[in-house]
Image (tube, rainbow, N blue to C red; front, top):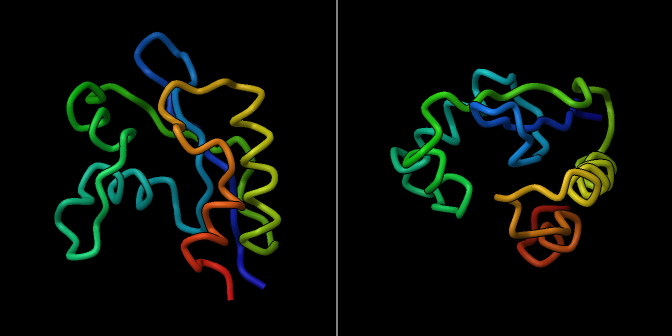
Length: 106
């Protein structure tokens, strides 16, 4: 079993603008979001495009510290936070459905 957590990104007004899940450290996931274009398989997303354009002072933090659980389990929790927070940059409201669609589960 791997460790996964749920994080958010807040703007300079301390508003939650994005929620995601990851199994890497906050520093690494922030670096990955800010530098996605450096990877051959890096994908531009609405959030990443706005992070580069407007997010110099945006801050990443854990909502749920990484715990041992499946990716699908943490994405269910992530989906709940997205719905509660009504985040501006989460165009995809259902990470579980997207992971199934894009073959991220084994």
